[in-house]
Length: 604
View 1 (cartoon, rainbow, N blue to C red):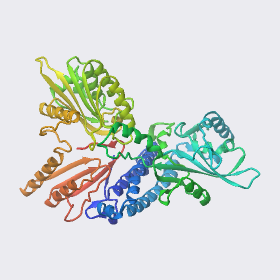
View 2: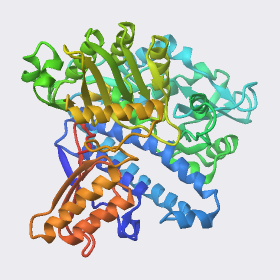
View 3: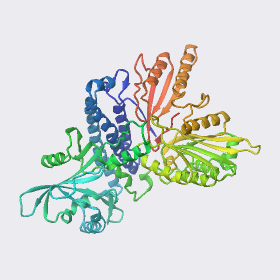
View 4: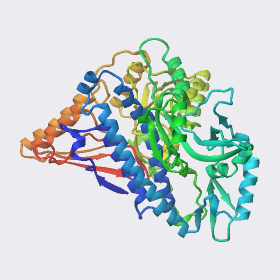
């Protein structure tokens, strides 16, 4: 697994004592691109890193760029005081960095990864490279499968309004009716959401030929526009503002508001219009005017968009083109006990995913659902699996007469609809559902099982995790999970659930660190302890691993520790506003960014 020092940003991107959070995120995504460029990574995995880069960038435009664009429209004096870099200037920097990265992306794809695949006999063919047999196969597929999904729109000749769906692929076309000189314009969907992006074609033994769905559509436009000559056909894609803007979330029904906002995502304002850089000025101008696009919306791209579809690309020969299979490890201690609760009684159990199997967490919930001595189960969910086994276990528990309380965070970006669907399903089966708290995002991944002992008392069994209670992501996210029956931790977790359920202010937490209650004060106290150690002539040392760091109070405290002589080692996957190695400020801070086979998700 590769590690990289977080020093990619230029001096002008540093303001005062902090990196800009959005420019820092771009260096993270560039770090993903670096994996795609590495010859040490298997070819199909490199293709997947290119897909991850593309998917990440899509979300960045849908959320962050859209948000910055909104800020540009607000009173400049207010905004410039609140931000280190004026939004308009920041947007210019973002677009400049992304354009540079996209050029590198295209070069890596064309001249490294695809060439490497061709040496293995795997080809993505252009229409002009097809044999007669392959042309016939593509025509048959087009007439059989593709045609049923096509929905052409010709400007000025359709009763329906022109409309581009968010993130979907289209062709923009310039047409001329046969026997007429009048130029007309149209667009046509490329149905990549309904059909595979890559079609396998007949090929020689030892070779594997594929082509883009885009090219299959483009080759057969005479079926779609039989009375026209196609003068130009270029690919386009529109990203729209996807951030849920819940105004005054303290008032009214939050669930209803989120449902309405989810429905509006497809009609959000544009945040990026991606188009083939070879498109003519006339076609671009017509499309731009038709969809009321601004100059800042326009982003040059290549012939193909939505390259996160490389996740779908098949590996016809297996083996060395992918990472070697790593089966998750079984835990011999847990396996030696008939009941997982007996194992936890014996000692705390720490599991490390995806290196350990997640099945023990499923066993925790499955056994709780059926155990006659279990009386209550309480859980928080941030991102549920779409076919969650844990969700099904909780439904069984409720049907088995246990009190099941589930907190569902509806503000988990892009998982709102799935979480809401599960909440409604569980509630219909007798699970008590607690929805999002206005003004607060519950990000904790915790569960509590109350079990009746032989003497009639109740014992708390707890799960504390850095990762979502989601058996799907547990196979690719690097996380830690603790199973314990520690008395004080169980009591404090129970108090936390009572706060979430009844909004009753809890007593002090002495064993758990809980955001909005004691986590900031405790982190500061821990850092102060290391500062005092150095003052007393001892060693002061801090090691932190986390997704992002942008909280300035915490950053300033780490700078203080560095100035005092404390050695601070940080592993930060994504956004990092800390500037390491600056004399007199952060010379004792080092930062690593780990990007590799698994998503580094743990906070430690």
